[in-house]
Image (cartoon, rainbow over all chains, first blue to last red; front, side, top):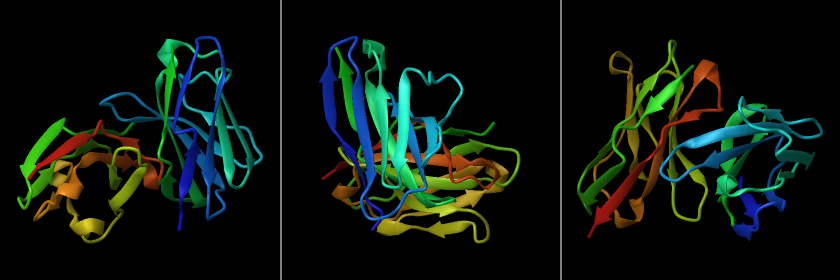
Length: 115
Length: 113
């Protein structure tokens, strides 16, 4: 149990376009989902925390208008990278928790390449 | 704010050899400490965690870690490494009892046959 999926696993887009990444908890209801960004050979950086039905809480330095997060249901959160630029190229990872606090279960990540 | 240092970017061991991955943290109080493993194309998997109590923590896949407050360390160990252990390993610290940890930059484990 506690499986988290992400779609797509890889995406290549042109500069200026928007890209949506989905994060799903497959066998549990996720009250809280998290979005991370991982640069090559670097640690995961928390971008935002989202709770179902409410606005996401963004970490300092993360542009909320650029990285739109929607947590419309207890099993789905989406991250939309708007007007993507090459510097947005990265590995994006989501995670989910079953209850308030508690262990995070991570998705496999999405590799975004902006040309 | 808390921070984590993993001093080794790469570690190479022979299959069957013992392993120790280093992790040092910075946090004023007793932290929550985690080790995660990330295989290519897969998400992070929790190997073990320390919250309180016994400072030697047993995890999955034969891993263990020891919390040493005097050294601010939480090193990960395995007595005999298998080729399937090759992956990226992340140490993480959660401050104030938080399950939302701050991650180290990771150590890449390479296993030679």
